[in-house]
Image (tube, rainbow, N blue to C red):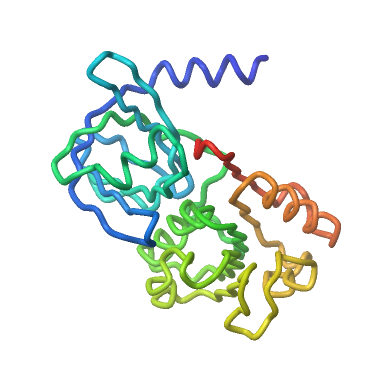
Length: 247
């Protein structure tokens, strides 16, 4: 109850800000990167997220949370939206949003699932599907800072057509292992979910690394349990999950 009350007070302190759409990029057939210009943006850390609110002409409004996909760039922020079938918000953002449209945004939100260049330990990243988004913000922040911190990414998606940031990932100096659940992976690994053997692509349990896991709830819970079962210190594992609503 106390944690919920603190969270409520913090949310009340955050203002809704107008974000003007400055750029829209296609990531996959059903996802878009959206860049907003947000005057007076207070800045953020890699791993944080924002709330997006849409309001209809009759006054009805709804909101969803989206991870920030890039480190701070003055008053410009970036998210990536995956369309959720029958969703209220994501179909509009993916199909109908246009340049110069203005959307209400609130944030940044969250402080536990974050990475900063000052963190001087190796980093393992485990992503399921669009769970790559806040981890991509960390990867970009590392490159932006000129950091030589060792990053290893284990990235699980259905197949190559579903991969986000496919071309860009090759431009960052990090180890990337792709696992396809419905196709043979680039390494020749047969199709399938992340399993214990795949943990060998991450920093070992005794390396003193911090591990970030993000993706659908089931993926995150299974990956976190697998890590702990194989000797990883629970205190070094940070998780972020999302449900079918895309929130």
